[in-house]
Structures are given as structure tokens and as C-alpha cells.
Amino acid sequence: MRAKASYIIIVLKKLLAGETLSELPPAKNSNQYFATIKKHGIELVEVWKPNLTNSGTHKERSLHQTIENIERAKKYLEALQGVPHKKPFKL
Image 1 (cartoon, rainbow, N blue to C red):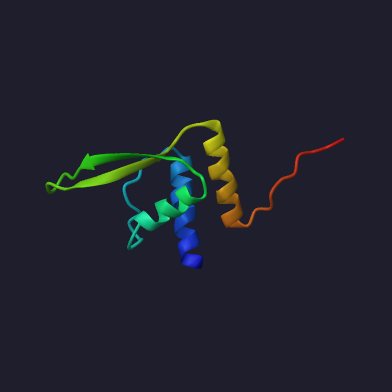
Image 2 (cartoon, rainbow, N blue to C red):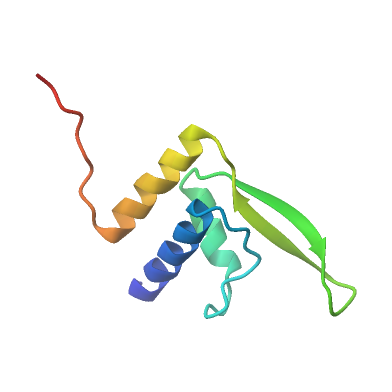
């Protein structure tokens, strides 16, 4: 379970940094990590691209750039990293 969470953390950090990903090299099946992220309500832009070395295709994924979606991704990342949720300051 811990290894899975660490891969999701890596993917979320890269997506939040604006990277477009088609795979996560150390992971054996990166598609499961993207599916887990989407199950948490985080929207990804997925585009089919042709492979450079053969006639197949692959998906490139990036984070859908809305304020709500970015905040959702940040909150999920914080939860995975064990950062306590910040409560709004009240007077």
C-alpha cells in the first residue's frame, strides 16, 4: 500500500507542476495510478497520441486547469502526505 501511495504522490506532484505524463517509468502499470486519481474526483485531460516507434497509440495525461480541480488535487496530495487539513481562521 505504501508504494502505491508514493507513486500517486509522484504523479500528482508532476501533474501539479504542469507536466504531461503518459507513464510513470518505475511503475509496472501506471494506468492504475491515473485511475485512482480520477476516482478521487480529479479531472485529467487525456489525449491519444501515436507512438514514435510503432503503429500503436498511448494516452498523454495532464491536469485539467481549473481552480477547483487544482485545489482538489492539492488536497488529495496533502492527504496522501499526511498533512493535516487546514481549517479556515475564524475571529
